Length: 394
Ligand code: ADP
Ligand code: MG
Image (cartoon, rainbow, N blue to C red; front, side, top):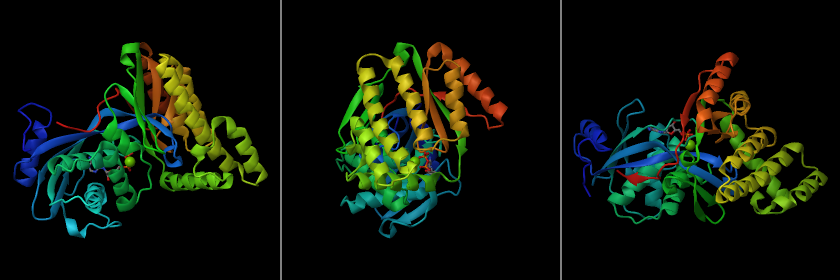
C-alpha cells in the first residue's frame, strides 16, 4: 500500500489535488468507468439479460485511510468543499447530497461485516452525470474498490457490485437494478459483458468495433425530462404486476416463443394494453440480447444494427420511455446511413447509441447535430465509445 503514481503517470495530478484538499499524502489512486448498455434495457429488474460495456470515461478516487472513524469526502465536480461524516452516524435515508453515494458504500460494507476505520477521499470524474452513463455506479464502485484494496477485504467483483447496488437502493433510495455496478466493476477492454441478472453469471463477449471498421457513437441529448424517476418506479411496478398476472416469479420466465400465449392470457384476464406493452418489451428485449450475442459470435457485427433499432422501437412503443430528442437521434442517424441506433439507459432523455461504419460516423454526427438545431433542442454531446477496462487501481 501507499504506492504513489510516478510523476506524469495517471493519477499523479489527483495526488497533488488530494494533498491540497486534505493536507496529507494519499495511499493510492483508483478508477472506475461509466458504462453504456449495448442491449438489454430495463431487463435487469426482471431477472433478465443485459449487455453493457465500460466507457473510457472514469471516476477517479484518491484515498487515504483514517483511524478515527471519520469519513471525509471531496469532489472536484461538486461545489461545497469537504463533506465530513462519522462512520457510526451513517444510516439509510440521510441526505448528504452527492456524498450519500460513497457514504452508502461505506455503510453497506460495514453492514456486511467489514471493518473500516475511516477515510479521506477525493473524487474527479470524466463521466457525464445524469446522462444515463452511470456516473453514480462509477462513484460507488471506485469507492468500494479503493476500500477493498486498502483494507484487504478480498471482495470478488460481482459481490462488490451487489454491495454498491445495495448502497444505491437502500442508502440513497434509488431503486436501480444490478447492471450499472456490475458493468463498472466487471467489464474488460475490448468486450461487452453479458450478464444473466438472475444467477449473476457473466460472459465477456469480444466487441472490437474499430478492428471491423465500425464505431459506436454515444449521443448525450443533455436533456432529462422531469418525470423520469416516477416513470421508472411505474414501469417497474407494471412489470411486477405482469409477472404476477402470469403466475411467474419474473418476466424473464416468459420464453420468447411463449409471448403470444402470454399476451392472450393477459388480455383474457382483463389486463390493459399498458401492461401488455411492458411484457412484450421485456420478453422481446431478452430475445434481442440473445440475438446480439449470436451475431457477435458468428462475426456478423454489422447485423446487430437492426437489432438495436428494433430495441428502440420496442422502448418507444411498448415500454413508452423514449422522448422527442431520443427519437430524433435514432431517426436521423438511421436515415443518414447508420447501421442501427437506440436509446440507452432509463429513458426520457439521457443518451442514445448509434452503430456506424467508421467513414460514415462524421456525416451522421453532423446530421444529428443539425437536426437538433433545426428542432430547437440544445446541442447534443457526441463521442465514440470504445469498450474499455472496468474498475482498477492506477
Ligand atoms: P447517472 O448515474 O446516469 O449519471 P444518477 O442520477 O444515477 O445519474 O447519478 C448522478 C449523481 O451521482 C449526481 O447527481 C451526484 O450526486 C452523483 N455523482 C456522480 N458523479 C459524481 C462525482 N464525480 N462527484 C460527486 N458526485 C457525483
Ligand atoms: Mg445512476
